Length: 504
Picture 1: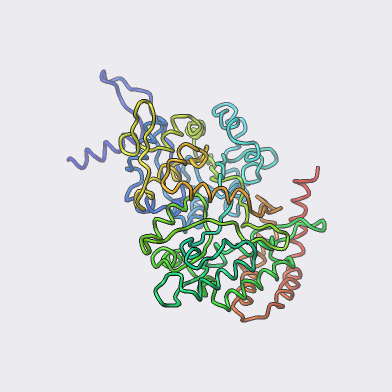
Picture 2: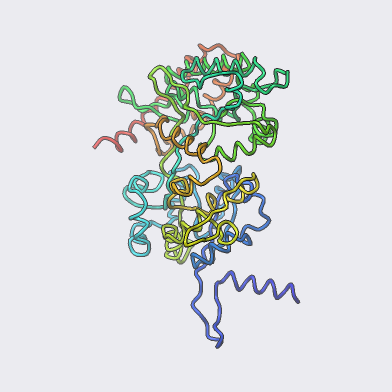
């Protein structure tokens, strides 16, 4: 009976209905079901029931919305999203990769999501005012002036280089700037025993499957593989440009000299983490600049003397560098037409721009994460890895849209190792390669001929060149074959998109 009563109580809570002390029915609390990617955050993925989490309960209380969260695993996001869209079993708010993404574009075309222009004007005008126009204009959000999703803002748009500063100091090395100086640093990491164990077991540089988190030297040549460049009156993918051959030559040398982790082409995240954090054997890698404090805490579990620093990426022939700049659009939220009360979803999202929302998302729970003394917030900054993971629940996961905590200078200055974070953000802000095809939907030929995309023919050729299975000159034949197999049509379609968007 006790169990049954508990179940009934839970069901009642889900509906948001209630009665006052006289038995009269009160106004129902709006119910909003939302599907969110876990983002690979340990606290989120380790939750046995995210809807019972104390932060989610506080979110319900403050937003006056009965929020019910469905988690979509980070590694399976696209697959699960495709299944959800195919089945038509959709929440009230759905996270997507953009309305022009492969999985969402057909749903938009088939009328699965609300056109939001009028609804926003009527129910959530502050969203239109507070969110920069650049985001609304993105092809990830709108098409022909019609808005089909609500954008979050991407405060940090690029990865940066992480280096073991303690290794640099021990070997009396200066921070490298050029490609040659970077290679010399990696060579010293390999040969001069910076971890001091008497073994040549250091991994100078590491990355992940399919060149993930290894864009440093591609960026030096302005050919980040995901990017496009408008040149000679055409929009062409970076992976066929002549500079790509030069970049692959650098990766080939790094691989052959074992300065680059020889497992990087097939390495999964957990194995990468095990080397960088679990064994503290890696000297250089790339990642998000917004939490080097977390990285340092994790590396120090294996090596208490570890010190990290973010440094500018290697500069190339044009004197510039940096990894690819992502879209200014961060999270993307669509409202399926199966939601009979889209106004409640919009009002919930509009709440994120209130001072109340920002205080909760920045500082968490009063009495647990912070106290108030003489009217001033005293935040308990996270120090351990577990505390940092928990903190990311309110700092990152629950922050669907609105200003980033990284923009709160007072909050950031008080953090442990705040100098690391502020330096990382500064490095990111001052570099990066922007694609001329930013936010472009996949050209139709790439949809029908996916082998022409980066992760197929190019990836196969690049891997063979880097590992020495094919000569560097095989890149020229790849480009020729790529164009003949449909690449010329891809370029034609991409150029038409560019001209329509940029030439008035």
